[in-house]
Length: 163
Image 1 (cartoon, rainbow, N blue to C red):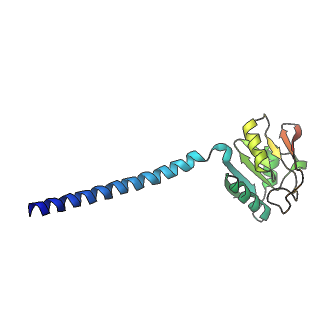
Image 2: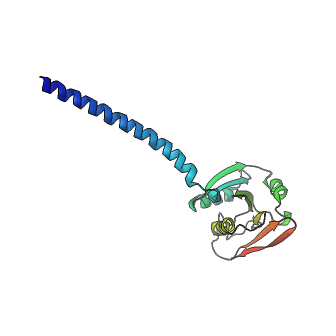
Image 3: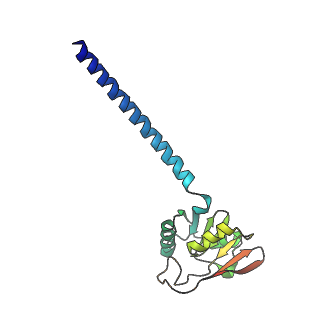
């Protein structure tokens, strides 16, 4: 009978230990997941977009950027154009929304590879813009053709990319 009692007690302790370990492991996993998310989304992969809430191409663009590995925060702002000019985007070069990535402003539907180059090269500019809503830009219907992106900073405007 002592053997049965001892085996029963050992089984109960083992079960309690496994349950306690599993619970601890789950809590640790949840904390790790939250921390991993914060760590894995580097500054050059975090994007905030100020956009007109009724602009479907801005939503399509945000989804495109998420597909390219960016964490996108959308902010409805009917006055994104005023915000754009206030941060330095030339009025004649406004895109359909304003974004910020890693300290740079991006106006319009700029392709992910150009933004990645911007955050890697880190030129001394305020940002880049793809004026208007070109049919072949990400978030629009077309897929081929070149896109001319401009760099801006202070009073200077220059071609950043013509691809």
